[in-house]
Length: 290
Image (cartoon, rainbow, N blue to C red):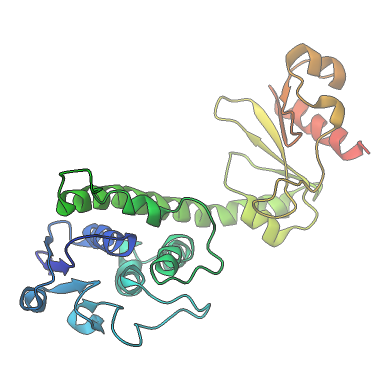
C-alpha cells in the first residue's frame, strides 16, 4: 500500500499530529492528507491520526483522546498520536535498526508525547519543538489558513525527524569505534581517535579513567578535549592547565615549549596543536599539572 489517504483533525494543530504526518511521509511519500473532523470522511481514510477516538493499529486508527487514552511507556509517559505511529512504523522508518528507532523515541518522540499529554515531569524547560510547531499556526492577526501552516510545519518536522534519525544512527555507529579506542589506549586516561567520532556517551559508559580525548580536526590539526564529569556537564574530570587559558600561537608556544601549539580555550576544555606528537605532549603535561 503506497497511495493511501490519511485523515487528521482540521483547525489548530500540535507537534504530535504534525510529526505523525512527517513520519508517515518517510514511507508513504505520495499519501493524500485530509484535515477534517467529519466522521464519515475519517472512517473512509486508510489511516486516522489524532482523531476518531480509537487506537487500533490493525485498522489504521491512531488516536489517544478517547477515555483511558492509548497506553503509556514504562517510564509513565503516555502515548500521543506520534508515539503510536512510531510504535508501528518507527522501525521501518529507521530501516530496521531497532537501536536507532529506540534512540529517536527516547530523544524526540517521547518528549513530544509528554508535552502533548501534559506529562511535564522530566521534560526540559524552555522553548521546545512542540512550541515551535505551534508557532506555525496562524495568529489572530494573520489571514493565512490553518492548512497552509500545517503543510509548512510538516515540511519543517520532516527535516527535524530526518536529522534526529541521522544523529542517532551516527552516534550508535560510533560506539564500536570509541570502545576499541578505549581498549587500545596505552594510557587509559588519554584516548586517541583516528578521526573525530561522537564519544561522550560511550566514554562515560565504558571508562571511569578517561580524562582527555585526542582526535584530528577537519582541517588536519589535532585537538585535545577534556572529558566532562557526566554528559552535558560543564565540569571536567580534569581541566587543562590554568596557565594555558585563553592563549594562542606564540604565547601558548612559550608556555608549553611546543613550537606548533595553536590555542587553548579560556574555559580549559579544549586545545590544539599542528601535530599529533605535540598534542600528545600537551596531554602528558595536563596529566602532570596539579
